[in-house]
Length: 219
Image (cartoon, rainbow, N blue to C red; front, side):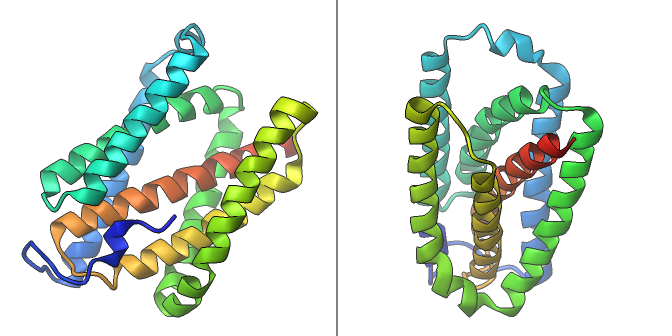
């Protein structure tokens, strides 16, 4: 989904050079992945299963939406970084629960594929930013339709369709290309770098989780 971050045309902070800007994006992403790794290694997923599902879901959404609100609305890098972490932590709980269901080798392979696909989409986003801008509305509509279809399938049809995972992978590939292309078109400030990393983080994690499910079925 398009973030207000990527609509910024003016800057309230000091503009930095492109290399430092991209470095901050990369380090912010690495920080999020590092926190997720610590959570997976340090939290027993069985303890999460004892939490009331409704309370867990409400807490997950509440934390994510608060984090998104902070990094979208704030021009202060520290506030945006706080918002980023409020997104990373609940995602970490979901990753913990999902990863525990798969063989470590499958998880490693999914991480490797996610890295390669992400790098490829960032290159394409750099080379063809206008293309991704043209398809972002279609991506958003497709994502909403997929979410609705999955909810109907789970709660009413009591089944899941593997093709949906492939569709979601394609959608988030498109989002990575779009968000990366847009990230390099807005003013290059520390705050914008953190905000851009937050948007990319959500794209990448969603891509990883779907690839993990696809690869896990094959194994």
